[in-house]
Length: 215
Image 1 (cartoon, rainbow, N blue to C red):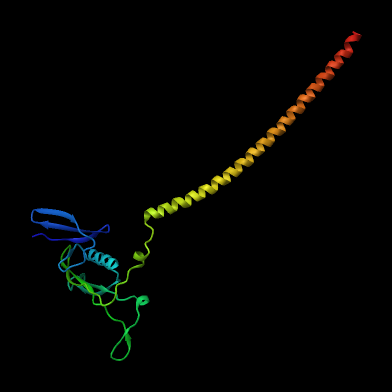
Image 2 (image 1 turned 60 degrees about the vertical axis):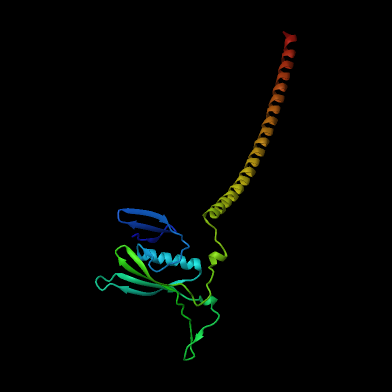
């Protein structure tokens, strides 16, 4: 007879069915609610599954009970249940016989017990809550996923690069203006040198013309 093993694997439920001389693996519907007889590979896997189920449905969990082995002190049974209506969603409280205000306890719960090494089984599951379920903030207002975060990072980086590019452009324009001014200055100096050379050549020629008649 096949045995189902439910666990949480990277956010996706998994059920492994094993039989004598045969073993198969299939993916479980992560939206499936717990049920009595459901098996897990560990207490942590069971708690992770119930926490994910609670978050999806709309309630917070708490530890209701624990039972330890008398032989080695290890946990052999764990009760998990609904924490009830959050204080910021609570409209009123219920008075007890003495007239004191008290919180209404929700009976929704799950009890898992260690069946054998490496196997925990759901012995009790109470589905119904005695209060309205609360849609989590993450469901009302989805947060950015990794893709959106990457887009934000790239956008911010692009803005920085645009500012740097504008600064580099301004510096380049200043440098080009300095080079242009320097070129104009050199051109002016070259023209002065040429003028001086022409004047010197004219004076030399005049001197030669003045000397030749007396030869």
